[in-house]
Image (cartoon, rainbow, N blue to C red; front, top):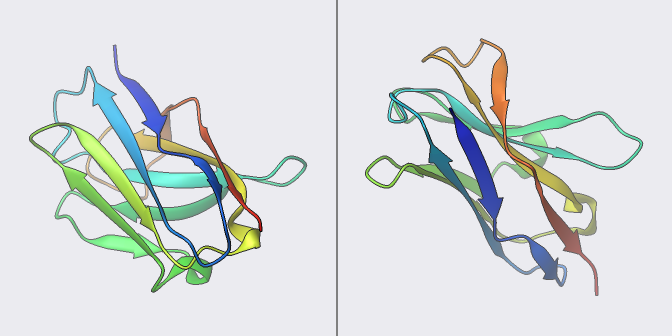
Length: 121
């Protein structure tokens, strides 16, 4: 059974940094599965933030480019999201998710429970 568990959220001041982690278990091909980070604010649609494909190539939504970095530790089955220069508009619940395969265009079928990130002074 595939499971994703996020950690690392919290309260941070504008301009600060946080690093989110997502521990994966039950994955046969973690190193090649496409994985991503999403975020959602109550009352708004969930937004894709970043993804990393089977080659390790990242992609980002425009609003976080240059500030966020997605990465994977394939030996430990952990997905990361380093968030720098945080802004109040980054406040959301952050979720990690996985495609059951290498194609990031496929549906993200496995989801974590989410971790709250709050950016406020």
